[in-house]
Length: 334
Image (tube, rainbow, N blue to C red; front, side, top):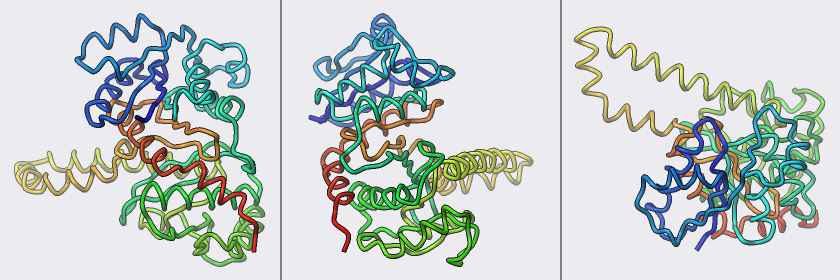
């Protein structure tokens, strides 16, 4: 049984969509137990709408809520009874295998490092979401945790991302690329120029060179390495363009009787294609390199993304990803 602590109060749609996602996860998998952390009255009221196996949900009273605008470090220190802090402690003390939250990104990053703690040898834990591509999915690492990364950090990101893609997604010898403004080795800013030769000579990753942003959706690499400022811009632009295209396509199919008929004919194929580019299908972004699994989902997450974020914790635990990351990070260089 995989035990997942879930922040019932985090995100724009808490607790309604969070608890709905929890119930859907329990219905889909029989090997999950969920520890709901939040305000007791709110959780009980929402749960009252559903039929579920009460033995597989445990309620943890957490009357405090860390708001998005709060300073992360101070919030973690002062709000010991918040859903984020209590959920993190459940992972730290071994009660739970993972913590999932759609709450404050800053608080989750701080709590992950200072409560759950880093794996020995890991310099900086990165946020690593899966992003859809023409060939499946790629891992964007880092997308929000380390905006002032050093070359050694990016090398570790490449190693951790390779472990994740191989053992969670099932891609053997995943291709690793660094985000750049051109394919040539001599291009890029100082960070990229210093990191490139380190990745090129790293013996335990499959480095394929630089990748330009326009080639990311084509699936030219499985692990996309960058510092968090660049990664976050890529992720947000990805999501914005995807949402805009979807609106435009739907609008164009409703302009006349002819387009409506055509739309009806292509609807099954179009729906399947658009589903593959729906970020909620892939769950949240794991904060890799910690002693336990912490997953950050979008603040606007609905039940489907919450459910998928919970379910992705199962594969992470079954594949013993933390041990494999520790081995990869602490492997002596040849």
